[in-house]
Length: 88
Image 1 (cartoon, one colour):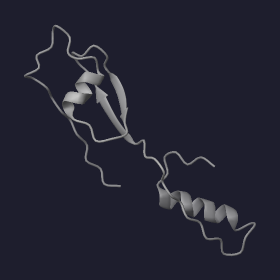
Image 2 (cartoon, one colour):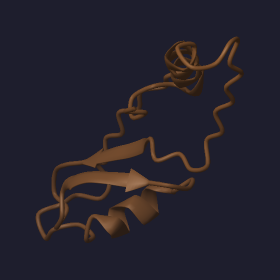
Image 3 (cartoon, one colour):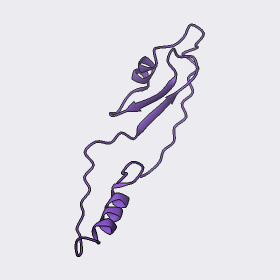
């Protein structure tokens, strides 16, 4: 069963429904071992713009380093950060 894109609760509910064909009153527990849901989109005057998947808390300076540092045309004093704060 595809688990990507589902919350642990949604996955548990789907698995519980599937197991009902085989087990009376199934009890399903979903444990998240690793979350890979942090994505940062870096565009503009960096050497390697793109999507970066983060596993840990990361600073802006670390993300800029991941993106290959600034290009010669960049103005490091004019960085724009657009953040989406979503509660899950």
